[in-house]
Length: 80
Image (cartoon, rainbow, N blue to C red; front, side, top):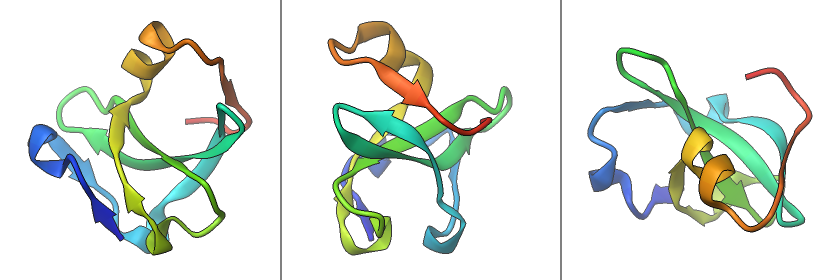
C-alpha cells in the first residue's frame, strides 16, 4: 500500500494498513478511513476499488473537503 500524495499531508497521522476502516462509499467505490489530522482529528480518507486497500496505490483526501467540493455524493455507513 502506497499513498501517492502523502507528502501533501504532513499534518496527518496515517494509520497502518491493517487499521484502515471501511466507512462508506464514494462514486460507487469504497471509502476507507486511513488517518486523522493532528490537532483537530479531522478524518483523512482514501477511495478504493476493492476491499483490500493494502493492495492498491491510494490517494488521501480530507473527508470534509471531499464532501464540500465533490460532484459525487459521499455515503457514510459507519461512524467516523
